[in-house]
Amino acid sequence: MGPGGPESEETGMPYPSELKYTAEHEWIKVEGDTGTVGITSYAAEELGDIVFVDLPDAGRVVKKGDTFGTIESVKTVADLYVPVSGEITVVNEALKDAPEIVNEDPYGAGWIVKIKLSDPSEVEGLLSGEAYEATL
Image 1: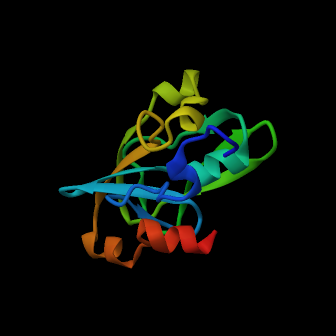
Image 2 (image 1 turned 90 degrees about the vertical axis):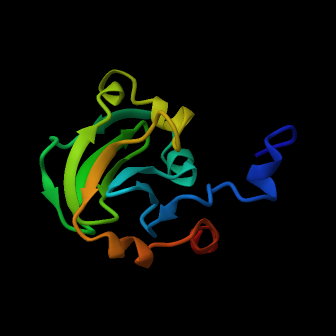
């Protein structure tokens, strides 16, 4: 960020500590047996203006590391990978009409899917915000 940008992006921790991360730039927030999944602010910034999110169908069973869709920007198309195994229970339908929400609020309204975890212990193998930042 240039002058006047949020200080946390420069010096602090731009990756929320309550989330877990993958080296492929996804995040997951686990609540009970459900995880909300999205892409990191770093990924959203690298992609540039997001113009389309190819969402999977709810009910799809996925294994950790599977691709579950793609995200398309003015620059490129990138695969989306699930950080944990389980069943996709909800997809963020708002992204169909407004994919730019991912750029605007990657950790909030820009979430992509919710997954019912089949093996919650997989979360322990994911990166902390600090460890994720170190991979960049």
